[in-house]
Image (cartoon, rainbow, N blue to C red; front, side):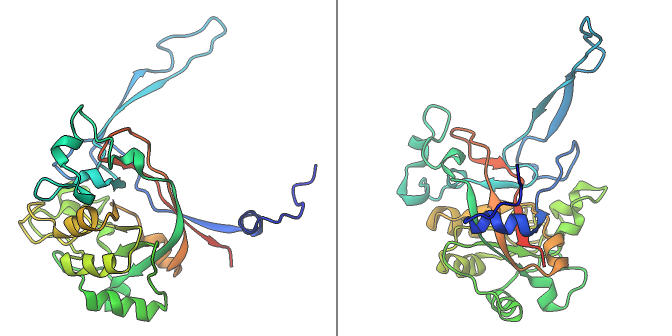
Length: 280
């Protein structure tokens, strides 16, 4: 049986010719940096090898995992944020949660994504080798300058990923560094979110803990970009991405692949997104 038969499927043909895959998800580990607003990740072995041995000498191990749905690299469903008691589309937030799950706008309603992805490498545009400083607001001017420098337009239906360079702190021995509670975290704010919403993108993401700019000492008290994107515009948000790989390779446009776990009625899901480009 030949494995190199001609195919009329251009996607399969591209795979056969060779692709580069950038894994944009962060490894999940106990003690990793995360928002204190969500249940921490925990991993344990209820059964280890040798705890029970079969008559033929075989043994098996299994795991138990508990975590919040907004821990590690994850996607926010539209049920995650409300404004003045309403979810996206004017859905009553309290009524939507009756029964203990959000059947409307829950993460199970997010269809798998195979879309054009655009990476906006803001530090490269600003000439910041180490990345944007703590608490820096990525402005509309920064976004437009990055689009111009990279020569990649943001189009309707895209998934736009904004690199601030803050991802360099994810593996810091002190998890509070990535959270930036006292220092702040770089990102877009309301103006940047509206710039994205005006382009009718499908989803956005960043290499930070809460997507948007966090002022020093402010924590997650005010999240205007979440309101603009999730509630007003119906645009999904992906957080804690690893964007350094495609940025280093100069891959600013790619096929973006993401499929949330179908937790019925949940407000988010851990994800392992991929950025795929043709080799060469």
